[in-house]
Image (cartoon, protein in one colour):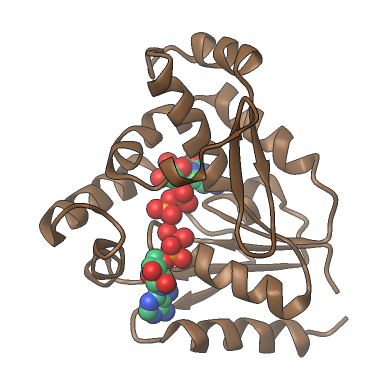
Length: 211
Ligand SMILES: Nc1ncnc2c1ncn2[C@@H]1O[C@H](COP(=O)(O)OP(=O)(O)O)[C@@H](O)[C@H]1O
Ligand SMILES: Nc1ccn([C@@H]2O[C@H](COP(=O)(O)OP(=O)(O)O)[C@@H](O)[C@H]2O)c(=O)n1
């Protein structure tokens, strides 16, 4: 069993849902890197820090820490010990997170958090296979047409389809630097695949891989 399995892809490509199920199928924890960026963004908004001010964001985190808690049923985000997971997946955080996540020192903070976790685990995000865990034995990259992804996401946000599609396209562009797949990633277009089909495809690839 590989130490780290990475599942990357753009917004609403299915990373979290697939990673959670793949990890459960393998009896491993699953880790959401995006939730850490969302947690940072939540604290930035809560304390009124300028999202353009990288030093101020790092100073904030040193005094008002966040912590990702990977659990089989889903990751929890703690801010100063309080569970704030319920506040992570909102249009407001969607609209602010890319500006926070683009700072090199914020990314380094997240990378340190992820690399401190004890393998084995399944980890999902944008650049897990390309940057954070380049030596991961198995890397997957999920894609889907923007319209398909927006249709999936619209049920999860208090916004209409047009708003969700526009924000998804904006975020794809804003995340462009970290979005490209690792050269050795197995790319899966999930546009015409059901969730269970994607999960089974990945589990099959893992189970039949040459040691
Ligand atoms: N292949 C799929 N077919 C149908 N729905 C899917 C598929 N993959 C994910 N979903 C659903 O789309 C929504 C967004 O998926 P999610 O895993 O949150 O994406 P991401 O983590 O990439 O943003 C969720 O409601 C999820 O259940
Ligand atoms: N590995 C990652 C994961 C997320 N992110 C940033 O964090 C944001 C939220 O990531 P997410 O995975 O929670 O978002 P969704 O793909 O679920 O919509 C992304 O839009 C990126 O700006 C990143 O830069 N690198």
